[in-house]
Amino acid sequence: MSDQIRVTQLFDCADVGKTIVTAAVSQGKPWKIIQGPWTRGGTKAAYYRFRLEQAAAYPRTQLWHVNMGGRAKWARGVFSRPYALTLHGTDIRENYWQDQHHAMMKGDIDGAGHVWYMTPDLREKAESVRADAQYLPIPVNPEELPAWNRASKPRVFFPSRWDASKGGDALLQTAAEVVSAVAGRGVDVSGIDLSTAMVEQLRAKPGGDAVPVVIGDMTTTRVDGDFDLVYLVFNTIGNLTEQDDQVACFGNAAAHLRPGGAFVIETGVPGARSLAPTESFRVFHHGDAHVGIDEYDPATQRMFSHHYLRQADGSYLRRSLPFRYTWPAELDLMARLAGLRLRERWADWSRTPFTATSDAHVSVWEKPAADAA
Ligand SMILES: C[S@@+](CC[C@H](N)C(=O)[O-])C[C@H]1O[C@@H](n2cnc3c(N)ncnc32)[C@H](O)[C@@H]1O
Image 1 (cartoon, helix red, strand yellow):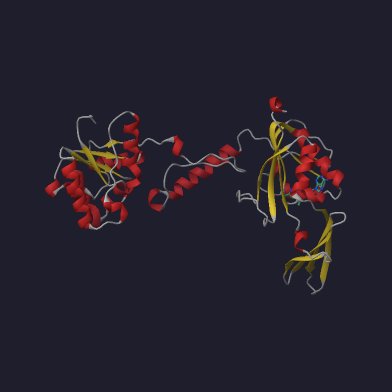
Image 2 (cartoon, rainbow, N blue to C red):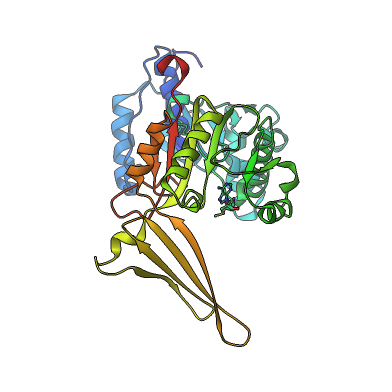
């Protein structure tokens, strides 16, 4: 488009106009965005008044850019000028082919001086309604993309809106395939567990065969290799019932990490804080089939989770699991003893901020990079 032609765009569906004007300004062109009353829910009268003001202010407008099928009527009548038309995905995927919209869409397309379409996979359809239709790529400004945060799982970002009419299911399927391709690529996972019975549980899960597991103690067992990530989830740090063992576990995790690598723990914030000083028992679940009671000893930070499980004959079987509970600050100190430092602490895997009322945390400690150590 030459600098010499005065173009005014009508409608800004999907920010097309904003994107084009931003790109033009960055190339030094004197383009600008004028906000019309319709974006603020304005009336038809306000709209016509605005158009008259624009016609007076920009008498040399020579071309309308109608940015959406079915809207070229605004470029006719007293404001009649040649117009170029941009067809959005839904215009050409659906509306053109529907009885109630077809005549208007066809009128707009036939009357346009030029037609662009924005969705590359709709090329065949666009060209079938207008042989000279051209694909108009819309530049994406990377600075406007959402910040890329490290996540516990691979994530895919699609700069597009999803819904059924835009083939949302197919996009979702593609995303799932990309995620699984990325997830499986070059990531070596190894495990340590004390219990062969638990490893059998792992083997029974999809893909569970693929993970090499060493039967051993996580306070001392060393797996071959250096790792970017060591993680210990589901309150497992509390399975070590002595402080020395928990400290040793941090040391062992750090020994497995490359400089810059991270140790991640997910565990609860002790429920002990909700107990009155003279109380030691806290019911954490009460149902017909199961009653769960935690028993705390603040002197040793030992605790038991007592599970009462209802049997077929109506009696309850008690199973009591021993733990050592820790506050986040004590874990930070253990990390420090192991040469690690806190990088992040969240209340859960969705990065909910950790606050005074959080009842669990996901904490990330890192091994300093070699040059920072
Ligand atoms: C709460 S379960 C976690 C189960 C499973 N890894 C998960 O993430 O869902 C704790 C696991 O830690 C294992 N474990 C407990 N003490 C351990 C130790 N000292 N060394 C290695 N594994 C231990 C248990 O056998 C059990 O499989």
